[in-house]
Length: 255
Image (tube, rainbow, N blue to C red; front, side, top):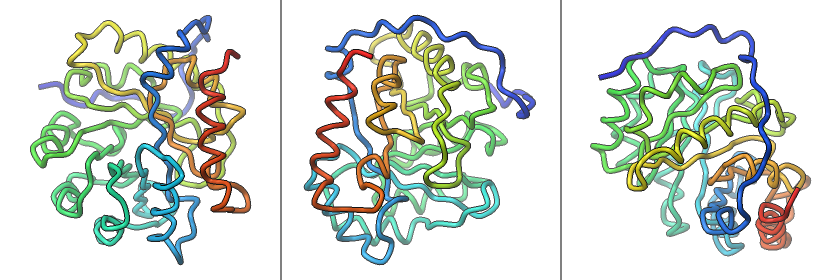
């Protein structure tokens, strides 16, 4: 089985943005909007999940930060379990945590449907991907901004999802990194060359808004993890549905 290669995570590898030419029908047919709770009202999180569901989200995205892999501390399996009764939507769990294998069983038991862990946090990505799938969840690997796409190429056949960070990660509201577009395009090329029944979804996380979603969709993303792009700044539950509709329209609009 493939094991982790050694990379230096200090600067982005040189990459050239290719011409964007994805068909609008492909974007519409594959688009999944995974709304993140990181920007939600933590004092009223159950109702927020209900509001997001009723507004038309496809998935609920939860960022579990351990305070070590990234400085921020959020929540873990206990919160996932507490929120499960508030929606029937799939729970898309993103761990920014060291030693993520220790959370797999508890996350599955809490009712999660998908679990993505960071390549940079895994001693043996192949082993944890098998562990996640064996638990009944879809398995994903995430890449920090300074990690090249080539890092996870050996694991493509084991993946249900690839997540590309389009912000530095670990903090809500960080500025969007347009220089991640070539990485997304490269991953899209590899995925498109795979057999249909083996293709992982390609997700983007960070800075997804009406201004950026069209570019990300054209680059090849399927799953768009958005917090403040849906919930607003400041939050306004009365606008969640309109914001979701606008994101879908912008994703399918020529850029």
